[in-house]
Image 1 (tube, rainbow, N blue to C red):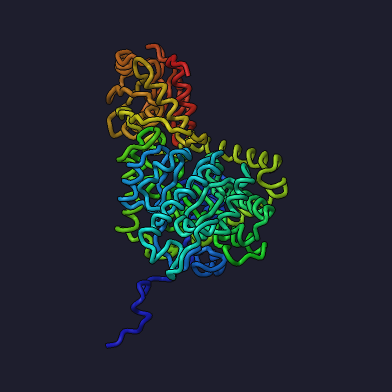
Image 2: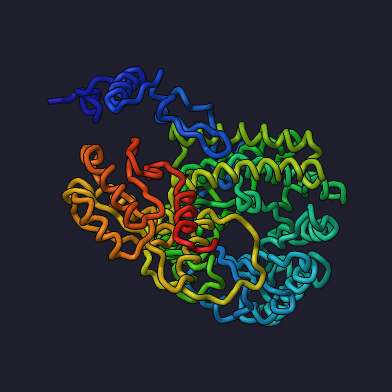
Length: 611
């Protein structure tokens, strides 16, 4: 018996799914939940901090057009046609040769060195430069660091030629490599980036770019680093627009110094932040390549038009409290960066907020890559998110908003100009304020800090970073309150007046305890009581000065007023109530979406703790 192909489809037997039918069903659910809206899209849409709208549903009508093929313009699907692994790039701030070798022996393929130039010979003494890529981060000493790296590579190349003269470095045919000059024996050894900043040090960037273009085909001179915009609190579209403006300003510097436009494009590497929001990170990297391809098109450039990307797990999302949760955040971010097509990825160790990472933290960071690459096979498929209605639409939406923002910066004078930089600073400050408000109200929850804190955790200690970098940390305000609470001779605490049986008060008791503990404030429960005098006696015994009523709405009507009056008579300075509604004697309410930071600061003041 032959079964017609249409009957073998997994959708056979089901009515066709349409957006109209989804709207009808979604509206029904919303109305039963008490939500009145003209459309479910309007009620359920989410807007990012920089104004990109995330719809609740996407279908084929949302596809923005043909994204092209991997390795071909506009490079949405990746700058490489063959796919393959990303570079596992580990950052080192301490001049520790043993730590560097341990990384290289256990999966790392690229070194990101933020050490002093004079430390490079010792750090790289036993490193085979022809087998890895090196990214330098020397700040104002970039020229010195680059010269040191050139000298080290030349020395290794010369020794290699003496050992194996039949196959000199930089030559695939057996012909002798040049003995001197920028095309000398070191040329084939070096890959990576020298880390020059074209906006802060245009002369160094131009000099190194000319040198790399002339004789180091695997080496890029300059980095367009967009992570400071992210670390200042900016959104994904803003990070993209700022990177575009900085990239165009870098092109102006390099072409003004005599490089051709194609050479200038080939000298830039872009650095972006990867966050635990995997879809936004994937879409951001895809949009970045689309935008840079558009710049290349306007410039008439076809060679070197694909954007070289280095993704770094976000510093802003990392926490100092409960730092173990950072392993989960960075795993999501690494997955997103690799899936999004980054050429090199750096996973920050989970203890990066605390200081210099230890050997265990570095091991976990590099093994995050290995697990995704070797066990999950993430790199086996090129652009695995491609074709997703959501990802394709989000890619285009981010690109469009970023392009508009880039044009604003250009109209103001461009990146590096006073007016352009002032515009960027104001825009990022406004976004940072919106983000801070969302964190304070716990609309953007931070696990282990603003949600599900562990008051019994034992803080980890690490040596300080040699060169601390300023930036926003989303958890910072909550963590400052935790530090303040920990510093008190006796931990501040609040009494939870749990009214009625456990089934009636448990949910709101857990909610209130979670909120207060997010600021390091302990909670003491009175137990399942209803008698106001018994509750007041338990409050007095606890030694607390602040109380919070916790129960079901049906019990609040009968008991909230009398209990609040008894607590006030027992000396309560402030009485909170977990829930909504107006009840006599209650000072303020705790509820989902309230200003948690405001509640905590008020409580510290009520408890006499100086902030």
